[in-house]
Image 1 (cartoon, helix red, strand yellow):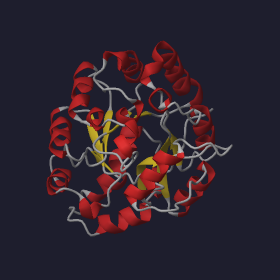
Image 2: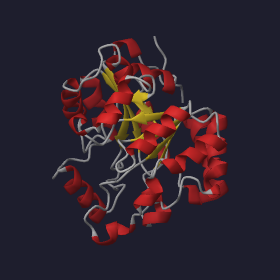
Image 3: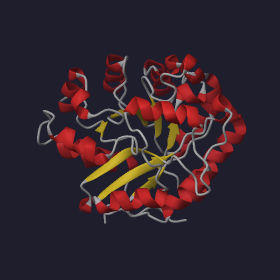
Length: 295
């Protein structure tokens, strides 16, 4: 499988946060209860779960590229994952617009480490997604360290969900999902112990926005993606830092399909972002971080 070739100059934006919610066989990444809670949280009632082929068409039509991943949370949810190999193969069929990330449950130990290496070396996966609350682990748990070590060695980013999640919201007990695991300060230990690992803190990190900004300004290889929220709801300090100290480390992400890039970009257009910073957030920072080809 060859490396992705994306004409970055022809793109209007790179969305670093989209979800493969359904497999080729119709298997969903989440069970009906958790998926329904996410729909309600995002007010995305009845939204379709697009296939990866449909995602590619959606982004190609808009002259955008997108990072695609699922979440391996078999330990925390007991639900079989969508195969990383399927995500990678489907993205490879649309290598002009899609960038595959993988997800490996840290509870899988050495088997997970072997899988991560194989996914990068054989399937050309470009990064890894972690969702500590759903995967039921603290990012600073030494259980996950062999996996981080391998990802750092392979030279690809690790993206961590941070802040509250719509998954399980409103379900009794939150569907068993513990929010505390998604405090970005827990990722600070990871940034210290793996100083060459590129880390993305996903989302405005409510209720820990200041913690996320502190980590990203203190650790040189920690980035923030802006997915999961309409820009009109961004905390003012996030906008201020994106315009200044973090202008080279903030990334456009939508959380598609629950938030579409069209809606996100329309609201972003109204945000008080400096003209010279906008292209950095929308495309340039991600292209550099992901090592995308410029043909």
